[in-house]
Image (cartoon, rainbow, N blue to C red):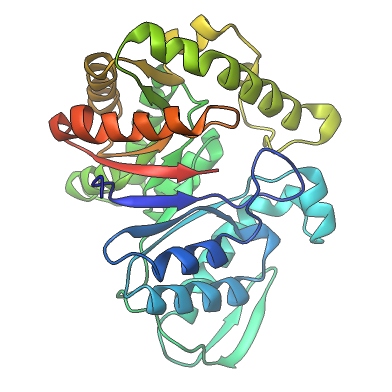
Length: 324
């Protein structure tokens, strides 16, 4: 055991970027083979699901895992996803806000009525109830400004992707705090929400910087080309209108590293870079994307071991593995 606190599983459909359309199934598999590892939905695409159905599945998962579930909610997904599952991308944020309210009602363990713009229910009594009270911890994927605003109004911590550079995260940190304060939350409450928030970073640790760069540049750039194509206008990608599309411009490997998209190097370099990331963002959680498609498995496993042994012990935050 290397000491990682949680694993986060992303929901993706119909593309090579992510090969797990059913993260709850994979999480149940992992729950049966682990005892303390927390299991994160990173993230579930709520607009593609009926909130009651998703709430039931997640409640069962929280029960079978003994209360080890964390639930990230997002609206990412291609145009094909939305068309296939008969949902409207234009309504995605509203569907998320209403869906979260409905899911929370499902998890109370009591019968309830619900009347929303997209869903309604009468005397609905959802069973089983999750182990965690009042429900598993919720997070909002916040890769656009309006998602940050929504999370702040709802009083939920955020999860950001690696393609949001640190200066932009700092700007959004101020925006989140101002919006949460305007919604009536105290500074202590906001501090706690900020500490619970987290972000993803591509991380690779090797004995030397040269080895780390050599191992990761080809798969990292291949990954970025796929991501750029996935989010392009021509493929109907998953970028909301409010998203700064300049963040998705295909760059050189050195530009990505300079902007903080990835932490790649020897243990001391990664340790320093990660501490700077924590200090700049206020996060105490980072999701590590360590097994990029195309990277050799022995090198990815070595990176995980080196991170656990030579980087994590000096960190003040929590580290988790991300499976895309």
